[in-house]
Every structure is written in C-alpha cells, then in structure tokens.
Image (cartoon, rainbow, N blue to C red; front, side, top):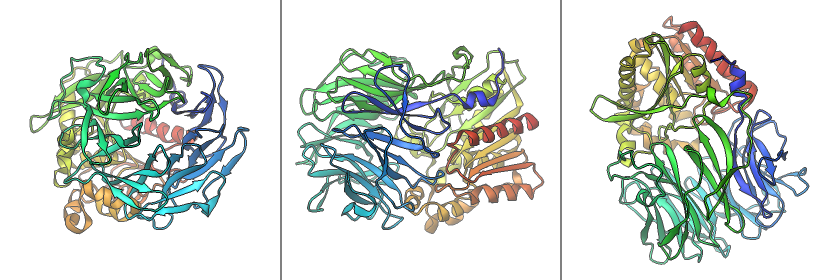
Amino acid sequence: MPTYDFERYLNVRSANSPSFGPDGELAFLMDTTGVPQVWRLDNPREWPQQLTFEEDAVGFADWSPERDELVFGMDQGGDERTQLFRLDADGETVTPLTDTPEAIHYWGGWNSDGSEFAFASNRRDESVFDIYVQGRDERGDDAEMVYEGDGWLSVAGWSPDDEYLALTEMHSSFDYDVYLLDVETGDLNHVTPHEGDVRFQSVYWGPDGDALYLITDEGADTTYLARLDLDTEEIETVATSDDRARADDSRAPPSEDGNWNVESLTLDEDTGRFIFGTNVDGYTELTVAELTGETEFETFSAPDLPKAATGGGTFDDDAERFAVTVTGSTENTNVYVVDAASGEADRWTDAATAGLPKESFVEPRLVHYETFDGREIPAFFSVPEEATPGETPVIVDIHGGPESQRRPTFHSVKQYFLNRGYAYLEPNVRGSTGYGKAYTHLDDVRKRMDSVKDVAAAVEWLHDQPEIDPDKVVAFGGSYGGFMVLAALTEYPDLWAAGVDVVGIANFVTFLENTGDWRREHREAEYGSLDEDREFLESISPTTNAENIRAPLLVLHGANDPRVPVGEAEQIAETVAEQGVPVEKLIFEDEGHGFSKLENRIEAYTTVAEFLDEHV
C-alpha cells in the first residue's frame, strides 16, 4: 500500500449542513477553500457555485422560505461569538444583520413568510441569553428583545401562525425545558414541568399548532420520539427504537431499558412527514414516516444510504424530498438527497478525497472490552492492512464532551496514521452518550476517574491483540478528551509512549473559573461545582499530579478558545517541563476550540506526526 503525506489527508473535503431553497435549490457548507463556506447546487453532482468568500468559517446557512436569499452565521477567529449575515438573491451582496461582535447570536429561524427572524443572544449579559425578533430589512441594534432571559435559552421555531416561539432552556446536557413565548405580549408558558434531569430536544411544531413533537427521555433510560399536547401538557410516545426501519437486529442494545436512542428528528409541519434517526451502536438508522393521527404514523421505505452516521435532515418545500449529511469511516462527508416515499437516495455533493483512493481507507471493527467493574466498553478498532504482529504502534483516541460518542465517521487524521502503520482504538468510555442515560452518568463528579480506569482497561485489552506493540501506545484526545489524555498519563504513567493533548482541560478549577460565563453552570453540572467540590476538582486535575507524567507530551491550543481557555495549555506545558519531561507546545493565534483553517490544521497535525515519529 503506498503512503501519502499528511497534507493530502487534510485536504479531503467535507460537504454538510444542507438547506433547501424555495425553488428546490440546495445550499450547503463545504471546506474546499480551507474553511467551510456556503455553496449552492441546483442538480446532483453539478459543479457547485460558491456563495460566500470569507476568511473565517461559516457555521450555518438557512434559506428564506419565500425569497431567493439566506442567512448565514460566522464568528471571528474561532471565538464562537457568531454574527448573522444575509446573502441576497444576486449571490454577491452580503448584508450584516447584527453588529455586536462581543456577543453570541444563536439562529432561531425565519417566520412563515421570511419577513422576520428570531435569535437568542447574550448581548445584554454574557452569562444569559435573551430572545430577539428582527425584520429582514433591519440592521444592527434594530432587533426587538421580546423576552429577557435568565438562563441558556435558544429558539426552536415559530408556530405555524407566527404568534409563538418555542424556546428551549438547557440547564445541563441532560436537563432541558421547553417554553412557549407569545411574541406580541412577551408572556412565557412553561410546558415541560418535571422533576430530576429530563431531556427535551429537537423540538418541532405539529401540523395543527396544538402540539410539539420532540425527543425526550422522560421516564426512560434512552430517548424516544414524543408528542407534547400544549393544552394538557401531557407527553405521549410516538416512536422508540423498536419502531425504526431496522437494518440489523444482531446488535443487542446495552441500555437499561433495552432500547437505543432516538437521536434526531425532522418534521414538516405542513404535511406531517417526518424523519427520525436511531443511534444503533454509533450507526444511524433512518426511518421516514407520515403522521396519520396525533401519535399514529405510516412508514415509507428505508432510505438507500450507506451504513454510516447521518444528520442535518431537512425537507424541501413540499416534503417530497429530504437532504441529509452522510459520513462513514471510509466515506468522506457528503450531502445526499432522498425521495421520501421510495427511499431512493442520490448523492448531490462531490467533496473531493484529494486523490486518495477509497480502498486505502480502513473500516474499523466494533469491539467490546471488559473494564475494572465488569462492564463491557464499546470501541472502534482499526488495524492497518499490512500490520506486523507484535510491532504495530497504536493510538488511543479519546473523544471530548464528555457527553459525546465516537462514531464511525470519516476522520482524516485517523486515516493518515493508519496509512503510516499505526493501529487506532476509539473507546466510548463511561460517560459517553448513545448507550442510555445511566451509562452517561457513570462518570459524574466524584466518579470522574472511573472513566480514566476505562482507558487503562482499553490499553490492557490492546496488550492482548496480536498486532500491537505494548511499548508503543499513544494517548490522543481533544477538549475533555485532552483532559483524559493528561489524566491517563498521570494515573497510569507506565502504559504510555507519548501523549497528545488538543485544547484540553489541565485544571478543573482554573477551567471553570475562566470558561465563558454562559457555560459555567452547565459545566459544573457535569464536573462538580467550585463552591462544593473545589478540593476534589483540584485533587484530580492533571496539573496537581503532573510529577507522575513520564511520557513525552505535545500540547496544541487556540488562543481564542472561549470554552477551554488557552491558559490550560500553558500551565500544563510549563508544569510538565519542570519535571524534565520532553514537552512541545503549539498555540494558534487565530483559532478557538479546535482548528478550522486548513493551513493551521496542516501545521498542527504535521507537528503531531513529527512528534510521534520522534518519540514512538
């Protein structure tokens, strides 16, 4: 198998986030220029038209329901303070709609005729989000604040008659509330009173405007599709994973209630057609249906899509078609358009693979390994085709979140290292989503280090794999996964040949003190609070235990990171260097929580490759 340089892999393109225009045209984001920009297609696999030409990454694009124009969002240098812009029908004129660069603006959608739009913003107080409505012709500070918030609010969508906005409030990753806001009076009605932690997500208005359809886990370990009656506030089940269009029944669900999560929903309020996605061990199984009653529905043919992870579903104007983003381990990310009734799918975008042959990409094997308390931990294990028994180095790549899940998606960095002879293990340790609520809470606060034990168990499992050299195991991770790298190096120093920390947490106390004000309460719900758990958080922080680190360490970070401030990278690099351990640090002045610009990604991951070549 020929080898390819890192730049080739980092030039593999991605097309995602589709949005249908009023005449059936398709807008999407693609990173051909090095950062995601808005592109347009009128027919499948044609040469696309680039619509935006910005230096920074575009985060989303949404067509007007009536006009040939769209709104897109963009921050500056990865600072996540998204501003809103309108791209007019000529495909050239960009009009700034907001002018508060120190604030975040969460897009809330157009009203029914595209004359107004809604958004949530923390422009009044950085720690909370208020709700605004703005006319399409208004600019800057012309938006009307229709509700003054006291938490992390966002807009789920307008009612069919444009009189109400459905709002969601996130208290933590596993506790949400839904409200109805009367746009004219500002009256707010709480429609999801509950006890304990309950998720209410992916909220859509029903066809008659008398109900909301959403995903929830009320009374269950896993999430399901439900109908919320707005008069009675009663929740009825519409569909669980048992109702999906099944592709493979051989994988037994590991959750406590025996189900998988219904993870995504798209509903067309005019026709009652909807799509829901079920997360089956990381793979998405899509079901397409149409409501025949309040909770009754008929299903259509299962979409003819690759076995992969899909998301970003959106219907066209008459709900005859829908578009989704599809990404698989050996399939780079592209947009498919599916005929709703027949399930026939057509790939519309042609994101390039930089000349890399598809057959060179490695498909992982889904495995389960036993950890310290007898639980089975799911993981994706990839081995290069020409692996030499007993001599293959391996990268253990730990996902962030921690409320996240490593899934079989295309990962150019992984494919590069597989091409260079490394094996790759991607565990979903306790705390990961996708396996039920109980599994996700197994690492909360005082149980934090149990997830690190799961990583150690992964290495012990790797020692039993015939291809692996047990002296060449690398810890790699970003964000919370960066903390897991640092914690694994401090708690189990003898297991590792090297560690790579990307935008990771080094000290929970300084992280919580310095993260964005709007995020602190949300993060404390997961990690523990500064008031009650400070001593514990300090005790498990990698900076406290850095004297145990013996493996060479590489630290990468963005200077504009609002989530995990760059001081986390600076303090761990300095502390470990004082122990005499080889440390490299690389800070990007024009990046935030991760690396969006192609030239920075090339520098960052080329540095990773050179670091591992030297030390592993």
